[in-house]
Length: 115
Ligand code: HEM
Image 1 (cartoon, rainbow, N blue to C red):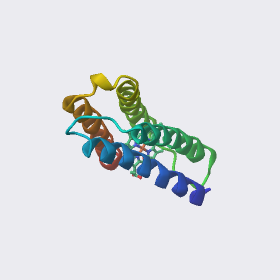
Image 2: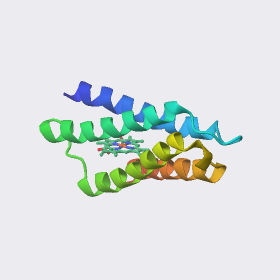
Image 3: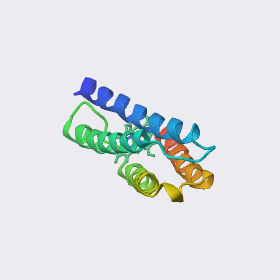
Image 4: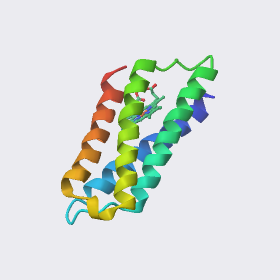
């Protein structure tokens, strides 16, 4: 179970790396690559999966549900923004992309600092 959890965690981190990297390299001119949506969805699904795996397993520490709730709200905002940006490219500005990047960085900080 621990190995499966770590593989899913790897995908989770790669997903957010794709979101952050994809947004940062597309700031000027502002556009939202489709891959960013795949990254966000992968990361969202793997995050939820890890909560389930940790809950099911005796050897894994149960995640702090308050932290998970904060991360989930922020991640849903990120995913919603990415979805809007992919469906309506005319709404994508540098500030719009900055909001996606900023919220993603906020969640990395929550994940790293709140343990
Ligand atoms: C923008 C959104 C997100 C970012 C940037 C992010 C980032 C990270 C990072 C950097 C880690 C590694 C830190 C560590 O292992 O201590 C991590 C772990 C984890 N994430 Fe996320 N995450 C996000 C959203 C989510 C969501 C939505 C969920 C679940 C609903 C989730 C669940 C988890 C879990 C269970 C771990 C394993 C370690 C722990 O319990 O904290 N994450 N995430």
